[in-house]
Image 1 (cartoon, rainbow, N blue to C red):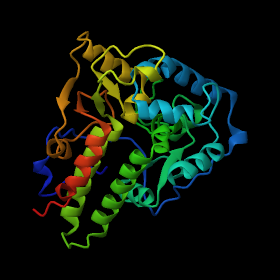
Image 2 (image 1 turned 90 degrees about the vertical axis):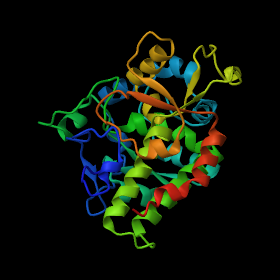
Image 3 (image 1 turned 180 degrees about the vertical axis):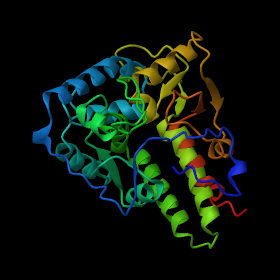
Image 4 (image 1 turned 135 degrees about the vertical axis):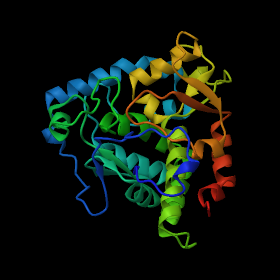
Length: 310
């Protein structure tokens, strides 16, 4: 997301200067497609993947949402080596019509929504803490820890997002977000560049507080899918939380009142659309939905919120 300001920027809250500083973001004019060469994956990269996955495997089984757990179990995502895009993509295509697009890294919102509109989800082959990651960000001060990185690496994309795309309702939700984002960019309503940029930021904020960092209420009905009973008030459905051990631990600690670092807020789509976020830190708040169906219905009924006319 761009940090560019215009006359509508004052409507946003929780504005954090330089929240995306240092992150390489690709646009349509750049060479953003980067095919996975599976034969070039190194033993070190496999070991990093294994450590990341196995560190989260059992804690996610206890706290992640049903949609995530069922999707993960239906895909060939190994816990001990890099996943192969070519083995995963056909299964998603068969289940919900989505396919994976191998990319060089973080895509700007114009490109991301255009790809989503085609039922394609961008995934990158680079992984945190690897020589390839260090080379990409050589000389740049960016967090690069096992527990958290703001760069969407292969672990975030595949382990965090992709299992959800095996669920038809979720996949349709993502598709509708892509269509909406693309429609905002086309600006057939003639709102102008400033309002297009502003409305895209609204949609990006909504996406961040839902499918990236969202929680839902634990109603005690999903423990049949778990090895160990979920002992907190929430289930995790945000991929940004799921792919970060530090973020998962923060949710658990705050829920158990062992930490006061972050707040749990009731879902409010208008507030969320106007609330900015920080890529570079553990989140200071999480918005909680009543159910996944509630989220889908709320988005469907409130699309005009993202066509603000000034």
